[in-house]
Amino acid sequence: MKIAVIGTGYVGLVTGTCFAETGNNVTCVDIDESKVKSLQAGKITIYEPGLDVIFDRNIKQDRLHFTTDLAEGIKGAKVIFLALPTPPGEDGSADLKYVLGVAEDLGPILEDYAVIVDKSTVPVGTAEKVRDRIAVNAKVEFDVVSNPEFLREGVAVDDFMKPDRVVIGTTSSRARKIMETLYAPLVRQGNPILFMDERSAELTKYAANSFLATKITFMNEIANMCELLGADVDAVRKGVGTDTRIGKRFLFAGIGYGGSCFPKDVQALAKSAQQVDYDFSILKSVMEVNERQKTKLIPRMKEYFGGDLSGKTIAIWGLAFKPYTDDIREAPALYNINQLLEAGARVKAYDPEAMENVKKVIGDKIEYSDDAYEAVKDADALFIATEWPVFRTPDFDKVSEYLNNKVIFDGRNLYSLEEMKDLGFTYFSIGRENIYG
Ligand code: UDX
Image (cartoon, rainbow, N blue to C red; front, side, top):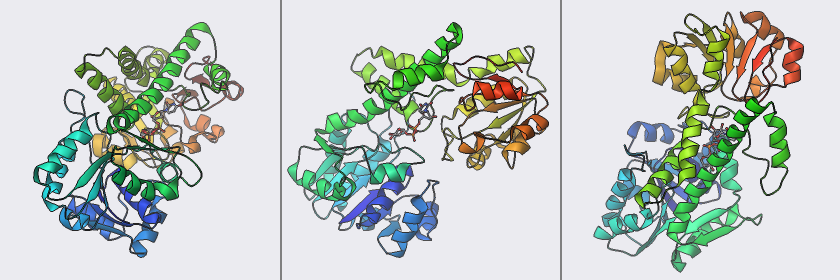
């Protein structure tokens, strides 16, 4: 099938590359000329494990193309994905200017029936708006379908190729058939394609992400209670997660959720609720608690250093909002760095992938280390913000030797309390006993 993907950001590039991999002829369109040039030259523009291999293969096999020309890109395409940014506007609601702008451009250049697919996370009612915009100048028949993505950064290829489910919002049987054919190779193992109306599909995406953000936040609140009541959040997590109604995943307490989706989607759903006069109070709490949680180790650090962090050197392990990505959007690490700098501390950071992106945002306000050990050299404390596997079993002898004080503030609960006791570290984590070495 010939398909087009408009927007070569994270979602667009994964979608285009993976659909080329299942044998479709894909053209990705973007207005950013330098990005398209890189992609045409075979240089992938995002970091996503495993995607580069598929990308190379499909370019070589001539199934994956890039252009800045919208009309050329959609020529002959049966399905046109809109994978455009929907940044939060000033009031927190999703800004649809890119999506609706492209919809308007599409109208006059559609030459044949096509299914236009909203892949971006968009508020309920957007499919109708897109349809109206295209219809203004369209000369041919078309359908607009909502098909939200559920890709996790770092494992997006797997999530795309073996989805738990595919959600497709459409009431058109013609569009349904085409989408069914397109997705058939990805659901061979029996996972469902769930067809529903457009509005329900649009809401499903917000509901899923907000639910997961709530699940994490709930555990973070339990962790805070554990600290006050002398319980251990790891034990409680196992105790509740083994109930199949609750499930083991997304129960890890820490310094809050970040990334490009959860914060934005929770905020957008809260805004939607406000617009229809619904008091979605649980979402307000989730946002509030997550905000507090991100920097909850800073007061503890201040207390440890006698109330004053000025002149102290803090090593930070992990800058990305989670492992296996270079994405630093809404990364808890950055909120902590800001507070540390405000308090007069010096920060030495290491992250396996995200340092270049951090340099672009905060430049030389902090120091960047070549590896994890370099970061702790002469530091007064180690702060862990992201659970990269390389931080899980470090050479603790080296860490103790390099640090001025054997103290770790662990925002991701990487180490066992016994290990920290045995090694003589002072260790502060989330929802667990403090260890004084
Ligand atoms: C998320 C959704 O999972 C995905 O379906 C959606 O399409 C996009 O948003 P992503 O943002 O890539 O994906 O990351 P995810 O792995 O879901 O983690 C989100 C945040 O929650 C991270 O900051 C992570 O550190 C945090 N998290 C996750 C926890 O704090 N505890 C957990 O138990 C799980």
